[in-house]
Amino acid sequence: MRSESQPDYMRRLKLDADELANRRRFFGITQEDLERLGALRPVAERHMTSIIAGFYDLLLEHPRTREFLGDPQLVNRLQRAQQSYFLGLFDGRCDLAYVEDRLRVGHVHERVGLPLKWYLGAYNRYLQLSAAALRKELPLAEAQLAEASLQRLVFFDLALAVDTYVAAQIETVARHRAAVDELSTPVIRVFDRVLLLPLVGTIDSARAQGIMETVLKRVSDQEAKVMIIDIAGVAVVDTQVADHLLRATAAVRLLGASTILTGISPQVARTVVELGVDISAMHTRSRLADGIELALSLLGRKITAAAS
Picture 1 (cartoon, rainbow, N blue to C red):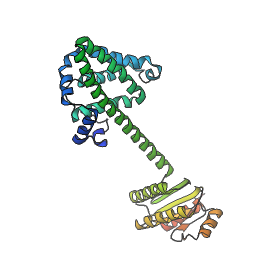
Picture 2 (picture 1 turned 60 degrees about the horizontal axis):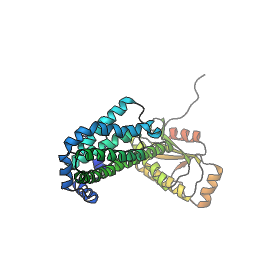
Picture 3 (picture 1 turned 180 degrees about the vertical axis):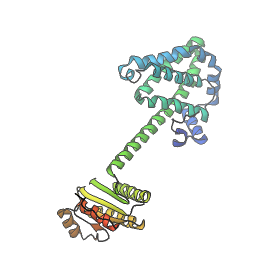
Picture 4 (picture 1 turned 120 degrees about the vertical axis):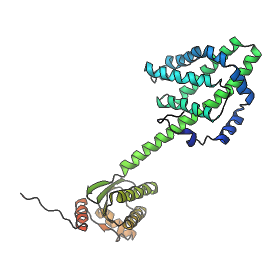
């Protein structure tokens, strides 16, 4: 059963009955393979402890993998997960519940930070130890058939592990990008119903879309009446940037708020004029302080000196 902390990889990877059937065909896993492995469960139970120990001996002996497994309690938890995984190879089934369990094992190892290359490499030892156990218990011909069935199922599982790692990394990258986007589009509440968006760096189409979404959401959430956009930190203001600002202004106006553009340097003013861009739809000020003062005046307020 999937825990609350485990992502729903079944849904994300679209692992439904059709996908499962396609994967089983691709890896050549037949019902005969599953029945053969299911009949060998008593053998697996007898050798499980030594095989799992050998699997983790490799991880703990190698200096690059040992650093991820320094906590004995963590190793114990991982070994228990591997015991469940190992016996699952001999359940005689390969259904959706089996797939979800395999994703869980991959998630556990990805979560502790064990690199995928070492995780995959350790499975070579897994297969070696399992093959040795089968050859001790079975005639050679039967052992070879069992090894082939086991190898197909383990490779099937490894593909699921790769999927788990890749999905987790994509999710991590997406979170990091969202954090960067949030930092690059910081909307600040400077007064009741007055918001400030200081822009820094280059504005391309992708970032402009993010700016638009952030601005509209914050204006709506805060019921803002004025949005100040400060472009003092924008490296280049060209036709594209100006167009993005105009679009943002129009969208903000539809929500019942006004836009004030501040941070306009003499160079930017000259560029806008030379480009023939009409920014008359928005209020403009050269300094942010002037923009804040204008925003307050639009709300019927003003800045006054404190009494001495």
